[in-house]
Structures are given as structure tokens and as C-alpha cells.
Length: 199
Ligand SMILES: Nc1ncnc2c1ncn2[C@@H]1O[C@H](COP(=O)(O)OP(=O)(O)O)[C@@H](O)[C@H]1O
Ligand SMILES: O=C(O)C1=C[C@@H](OP(=O)(O)O)[C@@H](O)[C@H](O)C1
Ligand SMILES: [Mg+2]
Image 1 (tube, protein in one colour):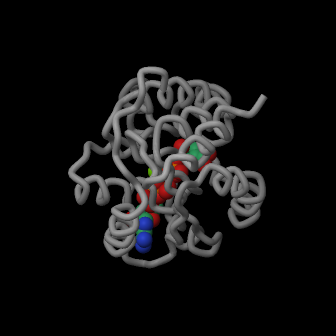
Image 2: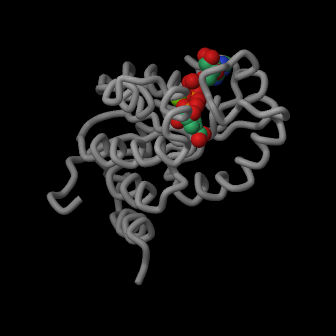
């Protein structure tokens, strides 16, 4: 039986118009700019913006590092799955996900079924530079950050690629420019449309 994710993509491909989807989802690695560019893009598109990590923090009343400390990565992932289901069920939003949200197959199916997916692709060198002073991402608390990011990229980049409706290189140093270019491409490729009741 084909996966839900594959089914949704085939369905979209068979519709002879721009990709219809009710939401816009940003995926990609830490430091790709999902949160920063997502917020700017939502402003340009005049849509509500949500960041999955911020929603988890609000609902839990704890920061991401504290959740990792108290519940481990497994606890954080459980919260992430539940929030992702809740947020992707909304319509007409821009949602920035966390870099690891694509690891869970159910998350991948929900993202594919409920929105148009933009992959912000970024090189490890750029991630390292942007996140050099970051202390809020527990998975970066490693003796060798480059090695950690490369390991994550090896596992996750194929998942980002397989999910993406549109891939954007997010290495430009001006987040505003990336958001503006993305808005232009989306005008050609994404048709905002209400989800069906079954979605
Ligand atoms: N295109 C960009 N150019 C330069 N800095 C950026 C760009 N996009 C994001 N940043 C910076 O990189 C850091 C991480 O960005 P963020 O949006 O939190 O990434 P993500 O949500 O993908 O982890 C922030 O300090 C942000 O200001
Ligand atoms: O890559 C990951 O597994 C994570 C990425 C973070 O979000 P950003 O991608 O927005 O940094 C956050 O969800 C958490 O620290 C775990
Ligand atoms: Mg983020």
C-alpha cells in the first residue's frame, strides 16, 4: 500500500494547476532560517505565523532545553508529534517546524497531506556560523558541532528532499531577501486552498 505521503503527492501531481494546499510548512535543518524566514514570509503573505517549537514551549510552560533535560529527546519528540498534529490541522497558516520534526513517519504524512512544503536547504558551514553562539538547541551541545550537524544531515537531508514541494537554498545572508524570493516563487507554485474534510 502506498504511504499517505506518496498518495498526497501523486494526487497533487495529477491536478493540472498549481499545487493546492491549505497551509505552508517550512522544513530544513537547524539554522536554515525556518523561524526567521517563516515569520517574514507570513507577513508578506498576510497569513498567521506559528513556530512549532514556540507552541510546544507555550503549551508546556518550559523551554526546549528544559524539556530535553527533564524528559530527554524522546519526551520532546512526543510533545512535538502531538503539537504538529494540532497545528497542521489548522488552515491558512505558515508553520515553521523544528529540524527534527521530519524524523517521525506520522509527522511526515501529516505535513505532506496538510500543506505545501518548502525545504530551506543550508550547508553545514552556514549552520555552524549562524549557530556559533546558540545555547538553546540541546542537540548542538556536542564536543564537535560540525560532526553532529553532518551526522544529522546524512540522516535527515534525504527526508527533507523526499517531502519538499519546493526547495530553496537558504544560504543568502539576507533573510529578508530569501523570504521575498520565496514569496515570488510561491506565487507561481502554490495555490492556497481549503483542505478537504478527510484531510
Ligand atoms: N538568510 C539568513 N541570513 C543570515 N542569518 C540568518 C538567515 N536566516 C536565519 N538567520 C539567522 O540564523 C539563526 C537561526 O535562524 P532560525 O530562523 O532560528 O533557524 P531555524 O528555525 O531554521 O533553526 C538566527 O540567528 C537568524 O537570525
Ligand atoms: O533539529 C532538531 O532536532 C531540533 C531543532 C530545533 O528547531 P530549529 O530547527 O528551529 O532549530 C528544535 O526543534 C530542537 O532543538 C530540536
Ligand atoms: Mg526554528
